[in-house]
Picture 1: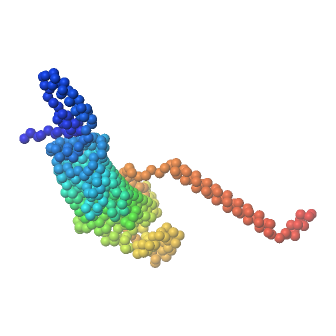
Picture 2 (picture 1 turned 90 degrees about the vertical axis):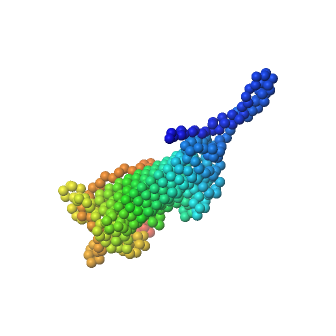
Picture 3 (picture 1 turned 180 degrees about the horizontal axis):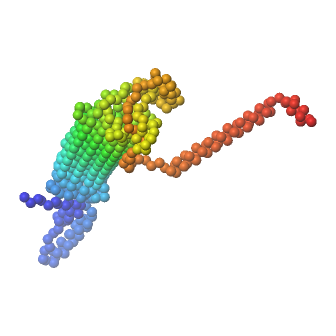
Length: 500
């Protein structure tokens, strides 16, 4: 069967259709010609005016496979797309919702929605009002900007769909009342890439196996990415910053995390990456920087033959680098960089980790607090890295003590424990082959670049403040010395010397 060619529909087509209705066939008689000419003049003037594009009518009259070009302007929604069409915005036309439900709902498969500004969904969380709701397979939603929407883009049972290069901004509501910027629900084989999401609640992938989440930026929300019951996922090149949690992976298997940036995620959890009951996870080339906890592992893997592997990741400047539950097993950590974390490894509730690998083939991890040496220059330390800290052990039992971490009192307790081994706690981990040089990790975009000008101004201000303080102290000392001399009684021997 020959495939029907696509039909292009635009504002020009609608105008020409209107003009066809105003045409009158000519007659041969001169009088009738003159009469009709006079009658057609106002009709011609009428049709010379620009006719507004009727998007509702275009959707109602569309045939499967049509391409509808929507000119610039504002179109009052909501809209229902019930036919497999391509809806292409020219000049970013605005689809304005009425604040009572979804702005656009897609019921037909193979729809393309591209190039629109979509605004003003409803705000009822229990009804999941969204800017765009997709309810059919093979949808493509790309190059759109969503504003003042509760949920941004919501796929429900829409497998093999694409969400690409959209900007999503949530309604200004408390976090608990916001919807998800992007939610994928029972929609396997989804491709979610190059999107920017800000101020939403979460970005959710639930019950949607075999999906790819690539090169997205999610910030100022609760969960940057939240996966549940979704196997065979690839997370690559995403920037997740200034959220409560960067990525949380739950109840899935065969998950790959590669070259993601998890930066400045703080909150009640504050995980850069969190794992709970997941199997066969591989994380490579990620940067977990300046979070409350860089990496959190809870009962992962859960199955006896499954593993979790972290290699060539940067875990730096977090309050806690790695936090794990004491029964965690079959984890492998190799050639990672643990750099200047407040606490490199924290075991929740205390104890020691067992049946985990901290080195492979004679190479372990780089630890910035390692105090051993490398005598043969092969980049591997001669002494085992086995951190012990009495104060960190006390923090495991009493988390409120973290307030005094790195204080003189904490340092004094650790010094006393080293001086009197009877108080020395058990080691947490044992890296037999610690690295003395940090391994190479992937260069990632999305990290804030320190301002040289700001640094110079701050340094100059601190230097000026130091000079002022020093000058003030010296002036105070001179004044005090002068007063002491004036108040001191005269010395007779000094007076006799002066009289001679």
